[in-house]
Image (cartoon, rainbow, N blue to C red; front, side, top):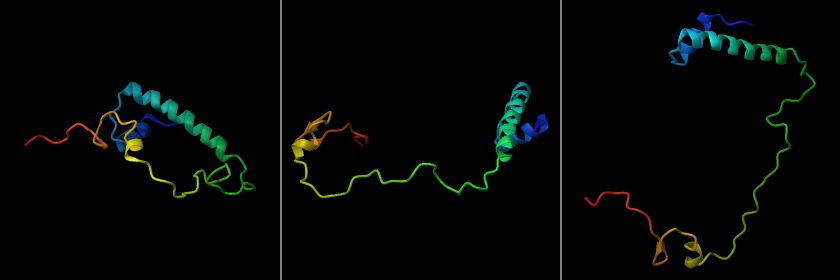
Length: 97
């Protein structure tokens, strides 16, 4: 399937792209090449393959949510770049006004 330059320009217009003539020529060839790959895929018989959202088996990768002892304030701020009185110290985000 070969796309014409006019078809590429229509696609570019839908995508709100302003393409030069050189870009239109380049993209016409590239998009046509991509569509040829899709034509090959459409020719495959996939009737014996079950529909699926993933080829990998689904499994839960999260650990069980079990309560534990809470961290102490010292442990919480241990890796903070700046801390003061067991609180995180951050730069001001609002003006003084």
